[in-house]
Amino acid sequence: MTGLSSGPIPDPAHHLAYRACRENITRLVTSAPFVAELPVPACPGWSIRDLVGHLVLVCRMAVDEDPGEISEPPPPPSGIPVDELVITWAALEERLPEVLPRAEWLRRRVLPLDALSHELDLRTALGLPPPDGSPALADALDLAVTGFTLSLHGHGLPALRVRTPEREWTAGEGEPAATMGGGALEVFRALTGRRTARQIAELSWSTSPAPWLPAFRWGPFTPPTRAVEEAAPAFIGSNRHSGT
Figure (cartoon, rainbow, N blue to C red):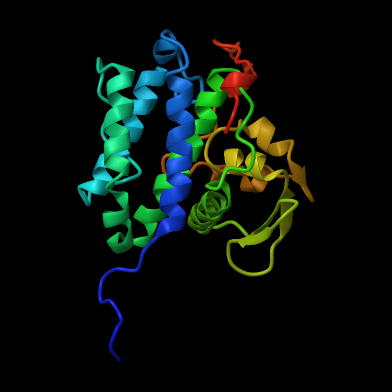
């Protein structure tokens, strides 16, 4: 057959979802001079500048096609002004269309998951609401459920039905022994180490959640001991800062 390209298939969905997160984060971290040094309660020990530095490193690993462990990238660089970091990040992101089509499926999907997770961390740190209808959420939630499924298997736990108002998954093998439900963002945050055991238990469960709680510790994710929202917002945004 002629007329068909032998090159990699374009992957615009993951790139555009990632770009939306990058643009949101860039707008928020450059909204005021003092924002960069504020702490991020969801990432203990990190400032907002550290969070951006981490995102730059993860993007650079993708662009360089670095085969290193993507769930544990190097520590974020210190001392680089956030304005420089976001310029570097934008330049790296422009190269993703060349890279993502030939990247392994996990690399393609983990980029928007990581960016969305940290955008939500940032918004929590600034006392801002989550983005309205993030294009990264649907696939990021799918990937989080996949990781959680592996954790259930590793802990020898029965399958769990995960339900949001829009969708439903079977995490684990066999017939689900229970159902956990909630809003898509709340389920995503619970599956990615941003909700305490108590908050996870406060989701809608068809039975006691206790047997499944160990599985919420997987990959780089560990439920915090204190709700990330309990820290007083360091910066109260206005409507001009809360756009998506």
